[in-house]
Length: 360
Image (cartoon, rainbow, N blue to C red; front, side):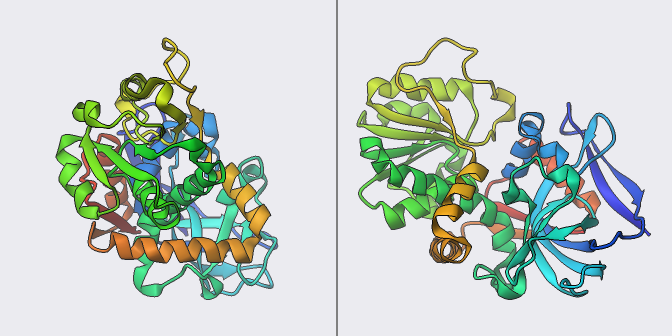
């Protein structure tokens, strides 16, 4: 039996090919998952863009020079050599762009397990955790597509708002986000609307996406990048999802000392990404990287898995109401489609109003 995997060239993300890889026999305690579905979003492009620096390429090994891009999705147990994991059980978690994945479950509970495969242990435990759907407070069989498309990105937005609220928003009056059409930004805006209604939410986006972002109803105002000068210079927090150095510089120069905090999250504009610090110093605070997995570990350590899960699930349900109808879900069959969608997304050719689900 062979697995099919999509190998992406690390130095040229629009170059990808399918490969057949033999599946060997399972070892003691191992479980084989058949991947049923996953979404392809700008978040996956970010994983590939920063894959070397944050070890995203290390989760699912590939030949030298190539990589397997991680995805979020659903899988079914088709073979098990673990006494507490049954064939037929379904899970949600971090999956390769592939047809199958072998895992070594540990820390098994009614709610989930972690993959204890040796090569995955240096990376964040957030990415090694799999949720057992039978006991998952976020799972809704009718909204599986939305969870794959929005779920991981929403959780990042949830954690950003939780962090900023914990800092009393650094004394800011307004939140300014770039790539306001991105799913992470929309998640942040939704949670801020729920939990921090006094903070004005301003979404920056390209001219072509203004209508889409306005239609979401998640922002108090939506401004095209070229019209940044129209944004009031009030004490502000900026959260940059774009990874565009020129745009970030423009934001700092516009607000100067009125900018209370500058956070960097993701890199959706891969053609304009840069490492902060290589350019001239900017006015205002030095941008700080927001690494969601570290914040997730701290959040669940403070609140516990059960209570923390309920907090996220409650905000998630409210977000689903807000996001209803904002995207058209497209389903594609086969890993050839996964390859084509990913390379098109890496090239910036996918409409943000589309939510794409792949069924290998």
